[in-house]
Image 1 (tube, rainbow, N blue to C red):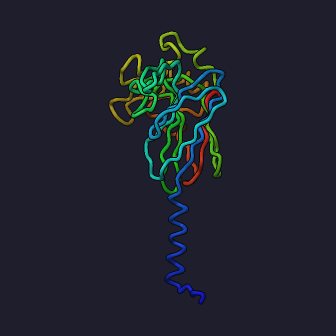
Image 2 (cartoon, rainbow, N blue to C red; image 1 turned 60 degrees about the vertical axis):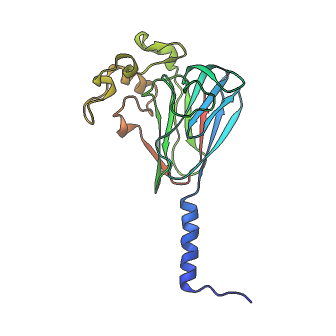
Image 3 (tube, helix red, strand yellow; image 1 turned 180 degrees about the vertical axis):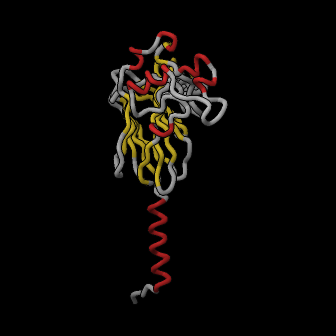
Length: 225
């Protein structure tokens, strides 16, 4: 005998469908288009060696906050996954358990309701060109594909990358350690912003650097787009 849905059961069914849709996990495809090996890292997610042309897919639970994806360069790990990277190193582990050390180009995100927030940040410096784009959903992609390392000011240069001035000088002018409104753009942040208009160029660069996508969007992070 077929069952008949009452108004209450129908409403509950619709709510369950909406709940399932709104809490669907996001997929992040991480692709290495560089001509060199990149050791991809994610928090949460761990780490993976990506030779040129290789990809790594992550599934991230809804509600994840202050997450990031980055690439590490010139790494050397032993059979136990212990070693060191020239840039982006995370506690000498292949399978990252935490954040990486500067300089590292960051794809940052928070999966929330009704929208996700995403950005590319150079607040920890730059090591690899990056594109961070949706594969679903109606929102724009962001990227930093300029030759930052080649044009890096001499005082910010470091092996394998370009430091953010906060890492080098450690003052409020560059680090904004005295709280909201305590700092503004500098010549160094303008260097990053001119070359990559989408990026976070200093810690309080929110208005021009934070972007949103509908909740449930899937994403692709590309090294060397």
